[in-house]
Image 1: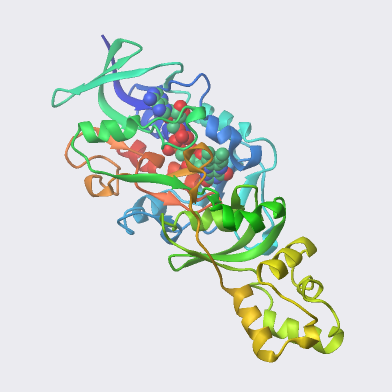
Image 2: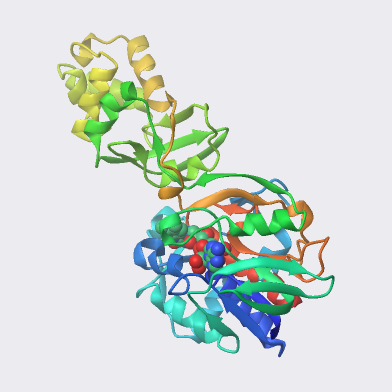
Amino acid sequence: MTQVDTLILGAGAAGLFCAKFAAATGGSVLVVDHAKRPADKVRISGGGRCNFTNLYAAPDNYICRNPHFMKSALARYTQWDFIDLLAQHGITWHEKNPEKGLGQLFCDSKSAAIIDMLLHESRAADLRLSTEVGEISHDGTRFTVSLNGQPVQARNLVVATGGKSIPKMGATGIGYQIAAQFGLGVLDTRPGLVPLTFAPHELEWIAPLAGTAIEARVTANGTSFDEALLFTHRGLSGPAILQASNYWREGDTITVDLSPAQNAFEALKAERSHNGRRQMHTALATLFPAKLATALAEKWHLRGNLADQSDKAIQDLANHIHALPLKPTGSEGYRTAEVTLGGVDTDGLSSKTMETKSVSGLYFIGEVVDVTGWLGGYNFQWAWASAAAAGRAI
Ligand code: FDA
């Protein structure tokens, strides 16, 4: 029977990165994946340029039942460590829209550069693709895992099989099953960083705006994001909505400030004194793209000229603009979600090593764990940091 020191399930971002550290100790490491290619999500991430980390990555940018859990790993493998590694490989990068101050770092070239780096860094480990993971058992000291029907024994087992998002790309719930098999808690999972969908009466005004984008502030359950909002045929998308989707729960209403950078009351009052004869939809076009201005004027049944509006009417309109309540009916689900919220309960894991407290040698890293980052490179930073924590401990 094949014996290795460490078997890593999943050759994605976390699995390959963990292999780098685990193999550095000299032990034998085998990484397996059922996909034909490693790290496919890295390949498609960031529109093909991989938003590999964030300048400002910190525990506050993550959602986890225990808000302290990710602190140790993030502190011991930081965004600067990853940036240094890129420099060693000559991979150049840039910050997207630096004027926005979002700290999102992308490769100058294709994300394949990151995959090549991961494969080079983990070259001391064996990599087996197109490998189905079957039954797993543990005799107290060793794990036996069936790989394509053949048993392999390992002292350490690292589960890096990711979440449920985008099943078409090979996502499965196997990590949660393994956690449950070994008695760990698994928190309910739901799609994250995902477009939100709306009922037909809302789509009546939203769908015709498909393709229109504005800068907005979207608030879900008290957490707000100032980023672009995109109208789609099925509802709302764009970074502000994806971010808010992480905090939105079925049945909740989100609040959209359609003009976060400009006080609508002041702007419309000024417009009234200069161009009072303008019709309402034309007046709104000073704040929004013309198509959206017309749609809002119809939605809110605005009639007459701006000069006809009292201060109170303008204030009411401004209130609508700055706090539009919208109730999504759902999300586009795992089909398009970038991440999975929930997962392996961190109560059962060491925050320093990612090892389970109950089974020595069993580790969970990356997205399978109940740690989900914001949009903007935070999720890969968690993959790198949690992988380094486990790999260094092995
Ligand atoms: P990941 O999903 O990367 O890897 C898991 C591996 O396990 C896969 O290779 C899979 O095939 C394998 N596997 C699953 N089930 C298996 C089974 N039963 N048997 C064997 N192998 C199995 N994040 C970010 O920070 N910046 C970004 O730019 C983006 N962009 C982005 C775009 C899109 C479209 C998506 C879907 C996601 C992103 N993300 C992102 C999120 C990011 O991709 C994600 O957080 C990490 O890939 C998680 O890394 P893991 O290694 O944990 O899982």
